[in-house]
Image 1 (cartoon, rainbow, N blue to C red):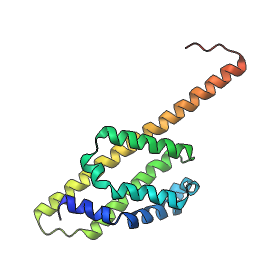
Image 2 (cartoon, rainbow, N blue to C red):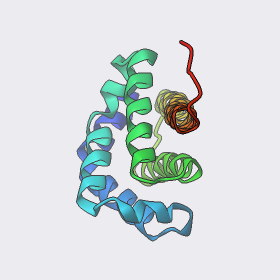
Image 3 (cartoon, rainbow, N blue to C red):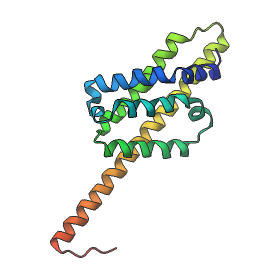
Length: 163
């Protein structure tokens, strides 16, 4: 099975993967903050990612991944999801995909094995970047809160803020 067929397989099963991931995130103690997000909202978001995985792996630039995952992280931070739980959710998502591929892929030739390994490398790279930019998004939220808190404190104290 070549890389593009494996990606299409994931995309075709995006709904069941999204339900499995959402259920896992809702049930795990390591992702208990995700209880704050409605099941359907979380399912839709993960299904969209799985449904468009080929585009994310093969056509999107690092800048696209940065923009998307900084935005997702900022939204999750606003939802009250801790950074640790956000990173764990990405890990769970990647592991779910690996288990799915192991259960679906039958390697009949060295070419198919190479294609599967190449896809795993692309998945690793994607999730590493998603994690990195997710952390960047959380840091941006934390910095904005720090500035807002500092500004409010200076205003309360009557201290002049210089630009």
